Structures are given as C-alpha cells and as structure tokens.
Image 1: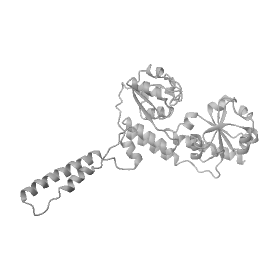
Image 2 (image 1 turned 45 degrees about the horizontal axis):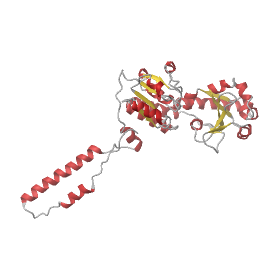
Image 3 (image 1 turned 180 degrees about the horizontal axis):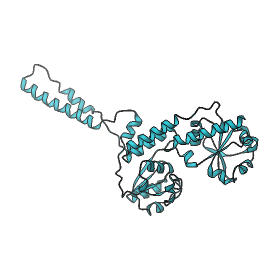
Image 4 (image 1 turned 90 degrees about the vertical axis):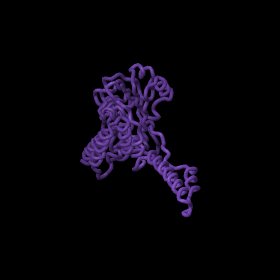
Length: 334
C-alpha cells in the first residue's frame, strides 16, 4: 500500500550486450582472458542488481505486507486515529499512550472514550485534527475527504491511509499491514492467530436462522442490511443467514418487506434498540409482531463497534453472536 514497485528484470539492452560478446574458443589467450573477465564482471553486476531489487518471496498478500515502509514510533509520537477499527489495532499493538485524539467511532478500549474527539470519520475538519498537534494521522482509504488529506499533508504531518475489507482475510491483512508499519510484526501475528483460533471455535448451527439486522436511530430512522454489508458478513460467520437479500447496502425498513422476510431473529446495535426505548418499542414498529422474531421476542443486541468493527476482536464477536443465535434457536424450538 505504501511501498514502491521494484523492477528486478534485466533490460533487453544489457542482455543484448552479453549476447554480442560471445567469444570463439580459438581466439588468442590475452583477448580471451580480457573479455572473459569483462563478461564475468558484467554478469556479476547484473545478478547483484537483481538480488538487490528482488520482491519478497511468498504469496501476494505476504509480499504486500513485507514491502511496507516502517514508521519510527517513540514516546514523542502523537497519533490521531480517524477510524474505530484502526484505534483498536493501535491499542492492541501497544500504542494506546501515543493516541492523542480519535473520531467518534473509536469507542474501544474504554480509555479512548476520554480522548478529544475530532468528529465523525466522514465529516472531520482539519482544524480539530491540527489543534492536537499530531505527528501521525491514521485513517481508512476512501473515508477521508480529499481536502482533509491535502490539509494534513500541507501541514507536514505524516498521513497513513489503510484499505479495509469486512472479511476475516481483510481484517488479518489490515492488522498485518499496520503491525508492519509500526514495527510490531510479531504482535500482529499473535493477534491474527487468535482471530483464526476463535473463528474455528464457532459452532455450526443445525439450521441457520434467518437474521435481520435493523439499524435504528429512533422510529424515524430504521434501515435494514442487505448484501455486501459488514453485518451480513458477521451474520454468516456466526452461523446465520441474512433474512433479506436482492439489494446492496441498506434500505428503509417497510412492514411489507419485514413480514415477507419473516426473520427468526432481529439483530440490532445496543444503541439502536435503546433509541426505540427497548424491546417494547421495537414491537411497535410496523410488521415486527407478525414475524417469528417478534412472536418469540428473539431480539439480539450487541455493541456497534464490537459487532461491526472487523478488528482484533473479530473472532470474539463472531463467537458471541454464534452463542446468542444458539440461545434464540433453542427458545424458538420450545
């Protein structure tokens, strides 16, 4: 992501020069010795150049990580994190004390909630970031506005943006990249091994329940998750199936679509259910009572960053959702 490409292929001109200087066996000894030495030196030079520029061995993902340029982090380094998942990774790598400011999605660990907030990651103003006098700003590719990027760079502050994908592979790649950048490769490997181990402990459910995720901010804002969302990925990892498909991202909740989907479980953020004033408020939403989830009051809530962050706690989150889905299934079976 931050490495320049390396060219390790000898040029046609160099190879042509070698080809042009083939020497017949019966030439005089002096000329043979001179040209042999010259050719040998040329070959060594070419081979030495190849070795100095060769790409790291291994698969493409490993090579990308290996090519990252390391950053020197010390006690004086002041970091502003513009993404909750990256904040978690920084803390897990041991750089919690270096963080001087975060965006509003940064809620874990609890200590970062006390730090100055610079706004929501998609609407951050440069003034708030620069006022914290950071030496390093970290964020997500495609999430930071171009003008903010220009202002940070114009202030001669190091800005590192990472690509993030809401999949187990994407999470592990992200952790490996950040760890490589910050000279914590071994810790990054330990975090990724823990994720793999925890995901391997997720129980396969006898029948995958239909799970509908509802994003709510009061009754006036209720959206359901479709295909290609991080929530859908988490539902699948935990052994469930998304109750609604056929559209990308999120769309407004309608009673007709809800009844047709007839989810076995409704999944929400803690804050979302709270904005509806609890389970009784959710039951008042049109169509909820007519679903299996509504009849059984099969409502699952989890912290938003925990469920949706796809960071170091990915395996832990999948295990917790898996456990809750099993509990809901056993209640519905009675």
